[in-house]
Image (tube, rainbow, N blue to C red; front, side, top):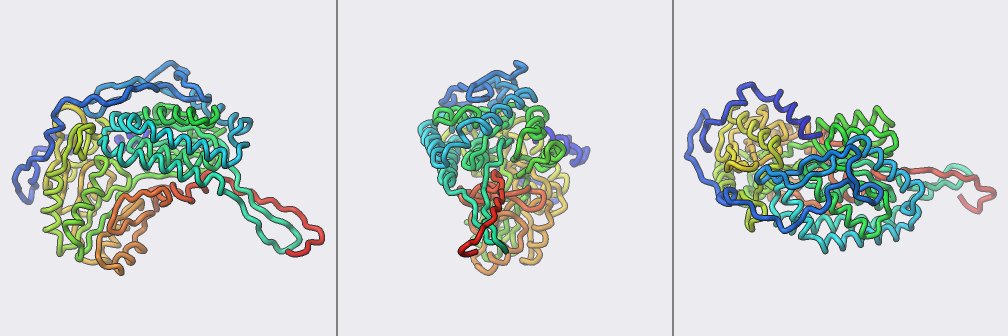
Length: 538
């Protein structure tokens, strides 16, 4: 849903000449010439390594059973390393969503889940986390095979975080409670924090398992039931994880997973009259559609985690070598396919030239290749649509007279690999400085002073995150309070502890995920007022 919408919008925003091939060599621009550089990318040209996992689950999970789509249709899941089909997955539509919502409604209204003690629910979530640890290698391999992210990233970072998130929310399950409220009169007043009901959840393709945890974890901890639609690009790990939940003892109907496309399954879930709450992560353009569908149906509450164009601000006192490495990570992590990527790198004019040379050198050392090969830092983009979108933005940057320091082209003839790309002399009005590219493209801008960079950083329509790199605590404090974003990382980036809330200002979303704040999304507050006769105290 998101990818199709973004692609159509992008084709209208770039100039007509952007369809022409990029003829400039890396390191050239209309204003300045440089040599052609080689990347550490030989591994991308080898034959793909066979993933150490079998694909076992491709049907919907509805009411505790794996079932085919009601239409009998399937859609292909691809290996982004070569574009080859690796599985055919049940293609859900409105009828499948209806079945899943009915199962979730029955499980909430009549099943054992909401009547269990919170401690019993937490035990099931803890057993699930233990099963994730047991099956970590299979889940990591599926995640990398279907999404293209490095296996070492999946296995060593994302899977431990995935299990940790569910343990965190299991710990919250029996600590959710209301309050006793004093009143001006003879009344006893208490508040009840009740589960909201059936939660519809739509997750993206860039972090399938992590987004599964961000949404399913708090919903279950609060006692809700769930219908989750996975991204059509990456449906495999959600189904595997759902199977592990069944093994952990989750009652039928509490967690239902439907695979399918946004305009069909996603739209049906967003507009369903029997869904009590909706959560969506994806593009801002698609988020607007989801919000409209929710409003036009039963006015269900919606949380949205949307796009970003996060500034990464390198101050004049920065250790340039450390700043270069952190800025590189902030942008290129996960192939640049990260909503909070530090995609506007603002560098103080006093260290700008040094930063450019070192940022280019670091990009040239980046190892791009098969995600299953040890030492690979960057795999392919998710699919052909995203691949072409990134290349169009690169062409736009060149046509806007930004200096292409390195990269800018595809790598190899198979799959969706793109060279790590660095632009200098980027101006705020260029599309590469305004739009969410969602790819390995670093745009480096120059600034003179703190007041100027605050104003420029805040001009964006997005407000998801920001990075600040400085040795001065006063500078860090000034920037942290002035930047209109949901998260500010100071001398670090992409720190995603389970307890840290995440969400955006402006067009980057509504609400917060993770931490105690995420629980509020899945609870209703009820006030209960009872008269008191001859109370001993008030």
